Length: 198
Image (cartoon, rainbow, N blue to C red; front, top):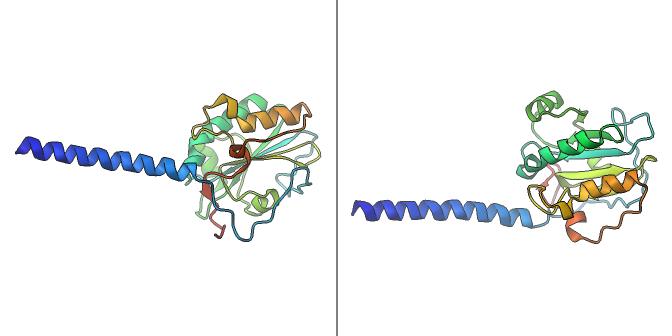
């Protein structure tokens, strides 16, 4: 009788754990709902960034929209930091903190080991047409929107063929016209921003 109870209990526990992971994967695979008040920002549109994002040089700008409470954001922080390490001499990087909690920029920098400017300004998301995290925004040297979208098709940013943010960085640095035919590059996946409405 004891063996049977233990077997049933372990089976039930495994089903619960499997269901939890399956549900999380399902939620991740669904696109983030577009807010009803969303205003489209088109590729090529000039983006006026305020200080401290107003870098006084002719380098492209890479903005990482990050919410420390979003599992998807936490999954890709190492990928973002690897991009910073590789491109920091040629690109201005910054993290735009998107959360309704009282996480200070300094706390986030320390907690996640971020070495680039971190700002908490939700208006930047609207300027760039971002409504979920994590999202990457690449502006060319003229501060025109070059790319806004996902980092990778893979949840953990491990698929080299769909490393969209990396492809965008290479494209803007080599002055190529970016062609994104992949729906996973441009359709927002991840966590809704705290101030978005359905």
